[in-house]
Amino acid sequence: MRHTLTHPLQMLMTDGLYVGSFTHPRGWGNYPRMLGLYVREKGWLSLEDAVRRMTSFPAQRFGLKDRGLIAKGKAADLVIFDPLTVRDAATFDSPRLPPVGIDAVFVNGSLVCSHGELAHIRPGVILQKG
Image (cartoon, rainbow, N blue to C red; front, side):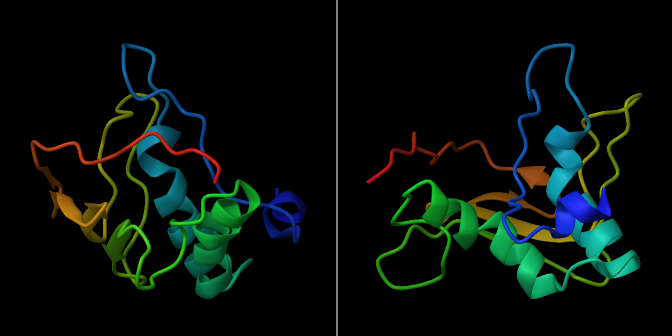
């Protein structure tokens, strides 16, 4: 596991199912698990490198020119989290438990989640290479 997660070409993404009765806990906990367990607790990656593997690296690799960085002209997809407390809470018995330590999530500049409370807006768009 360590060899795979720390390989220079490794990006962090998830293919978890988010709807229906057969959800997987990684749908709610994949990124917080990386930050809490593999960055903070095990020290396998630096926080900066882990965030890069979740953001700019996949955006660059898949040609998503307006994603992955915080800069003028980019989409404002942001997660505000506490690196000292962020961790996954989802389990196979309770796969939809929200993570701990995430204060806010913005998609395309719109606040979609604040302290675990979901907003009733869906500002996401289908992403295309370009």
